[in-house]
Image 1 (spheres, helix red, strand yellow):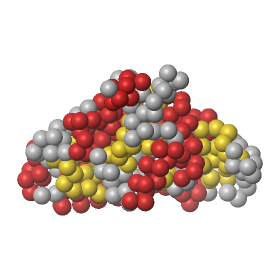
Image 2 (cartoon, rainbow, N blue to C red):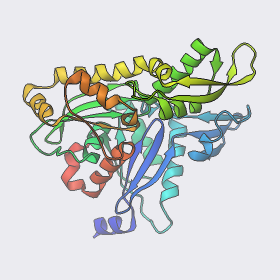
Image 3 (tube, rainbow, N blue to C red):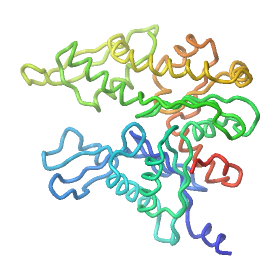
Length: 340
């Protein structure tokens, strides 16, 4: 009876606690929140003044009395106190007063997360108001979100390219047979574009602008039609704002090392996968998830380098959150995938 009441009066949740964005899935409703993992605090009193979209909109336009913090780095908690505040804010945003019991929460975390990092996530979620906290590896959640038959005795390979990490995993019968977490992903691509602008154009551009350039004209392989984009930055020598044009070829060159690191991680995974599971991957290919899956030409580049079929998950940006959501919807079926 107690279990029934807890289930009825609380709303169980799943969270993709990402370096760039946090998504929350509510049992029975689907994804109810998708906001940047950003917090704005005052410099002197450390008072929180904005979280999520509101905080992100302040980046580059705030005074010296305000500090903008991204409390997660490379997919794990870098600032425990600010992360706890952010999670509490997001949970309060999706839960109403009628949810009188604290929710059960499934949180997706990077592969290879340390025991200290696990404890930080659990404690932050607990302080934020969650009742029971279960952890699941991000590539496992991505595979579930992509609809792969992870309960079957066959190899399923997923590559989840997020903001802070690229997760590569081979999954069979609810178990990760091989996994690797490379701390190179979307954020590193943004930074490489910023460095390129400084080095080759002597211009300073913001990280938000670099991300916009990546999304608009970024690519892993040359397209049939070249693309250009006008952007505004600040000259290093004069400090004067200036508009200049960048090409897709320049941005591709800027991101070359980041893309190669992702390709290398996929190659290593295939080399270390047991033969029978590798044969399954040969037959069905592997799947891309996360925001990085949307980089133009990345699927073609990976296919050329591996000679395998590369599939892109439906709505790859939300694959991890939807997969974690499926777990909270069917806890008994997926209970063996929890890592804590």
